[in-house]
Image (cartoon, rainbow, N blue to C red; front, side):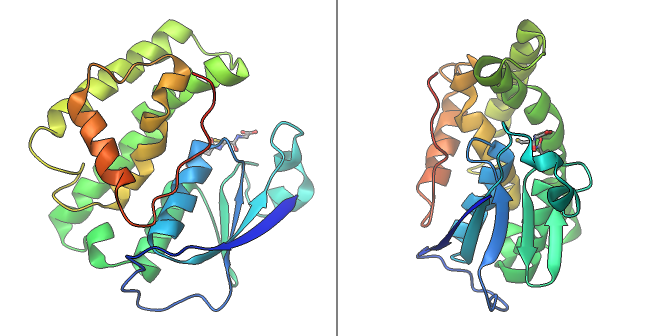
Length: 222
Ligand SMILES: N[C@@H](CCC(=O)N[C@@H](CS)C(=O)NCC(=O)O)C(=O)O
């Protein structure tokens, strides 16, 4: 386990309801998009973070110490004081609710539902499409390459259509729906999924990359 502490300096540091008294610990793997979405949101909120590297190739996620944090032996896990949360989207909900301005996770029923729909896509079509295609290309994951790439293309086509009418996935302002979907879309070419046919998706990626505090995930050879 390798630990590093950083303090994000986002110009949009949250109009937070409170600030953590100590850095938020993020147990992550450097090439994990699920981990990166949490790091990105912490940075956009300008929250102090301590990055704890978990050696996934070495199997550290299966250690008793890590399983005590995450029952399914995965990353990411977040620790904020005595609060421990696993699952990237659950962590985004926690951070938005505890530290973020309301636009990240609207409280009105229709706005909250629109965000939830895209969180479900992030845990479904995104994970089993672009993210899985990347796992095939980078880590020889045992998925059918044609099937996961077709799933990725279908998802990107829908996203491109949806983004015709608005700047972000759930409206005119960025929400955690955008953060949850950003990383694996941006890194889709690493799974041999081209973004060329999807101009609105590429514009949406650029809008997220222009947000103050944006941090990228390390690129892998496409
Ligand atoms: N639904 C989970 C998925 C997390 C996930 O798939 N994590 C991967 C890395 S991207 C992992 O920990 N894999 C290690 C393993 O399953 O052994 C989330 O959103 O956090």
